[in-house]
Image 1 (cartoon, rainbow, N blue to C red):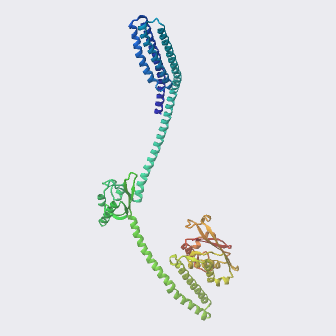
Image 2: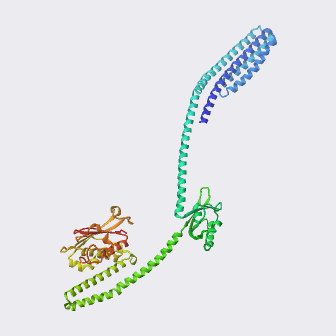
Length: 569
């Protein structure tokens, strides 16, 4: 804005100078005419009086005329019209001065009262008239330029206050905008500073809560910087000693000092620090387990820094040791469980089979010798032995339902379903049950477990069928997207196979829909319906092994529906 105003003032000054220049040209033209008149007057005075005193203005005017003419040539050097006029004027002035010289010589020699002398005077008069006309024309030309330049000067003079005022207004507006921008930036800066303070404090608190400290190794300067909490992890007050490797190594456990020093030397050399583990001893004697990690950062000005984090993992180490102890205990329990399975499958079943064998013989050969109460007791023993055998078989089945024991493979599900129906063929014929199913595509499953799933679900529908009503079991298939089924919580796959088992049995109250999958859970009296409460628990475990879902819906005396969702792989 200042430059613009300066330029306008320069333009105004130049317009004044041009006006002044025009006046100077006119003055010089007038002076040339005046000098020539003086020379003419001096000539006449000398011719009349023959007094050489009159020649003094004649000679001085000639010199002055030459000076003015030279000045005019300089003033009008950029005006071609005036330059051409000056050439003509120079010729006329030279001719006029030549006539003056001839007149002097002729008058001194022949006198002034002759026809030739009067002819010279007449030529001089005509030349002088031409000079006056040429100068008048040149003055007129300058006057025209003067009017134009006066007009421009007046316009510049009129516009100057407006321009300067406008420049001041614009400058003021820019200053106000600048102030507003600076004020806004200051507010943002204050806001950012507050956020940085909050972030810094939250970082400090997070270090305290998570038991870790930060450190920075400035590689170019070969110096360290520790956060306050790193000092606290060492059992010291913040910034209580210089952050150097030597001071830090004083806290390191003697057994770990050599290895840590090697890692630090390697870090300085390779400008990198992978995870390292070591122990430190605080001044109060407490031993802490530390884990450290560093990563290289290169700034725009090529300054290298190694940013590191040191964490107190003492609790993790303790928990890891505790977890190891519990894992060992779990392994022992698993071995004991395996021993139990072996006992249940062999040692327990063998005496149970003998008991059932002797009960069968007693019932066949000695039943007639027993009293009515004896027969009742015998019948109850038979039922208890059968339930015990069924319970042992179901427990063995539940314990063997383990994904790690089987391998997932692409399986013909329709064949698996037929095998399950063959397993239940006797019950199906006995109850005259009708089982219908859709065509099921191949799936990636554990075949044995899925067959057990089908056996348990179909067997459950057969077991809890209505008296004097033929069971009807419908098995349908569909492929679903997880977005369309809200009941699937945190699904791992986007698509699932859906198998639906619908029967017309006695059903159940919906409030027990989740309870029926709990181990040993029964909704009916054992005298009403046989069973151990393990069958559906096995189903749930099989589905969990396949990372799927199983849901049950029921209505009393209207039947039950089981929905099975298996991952689509």
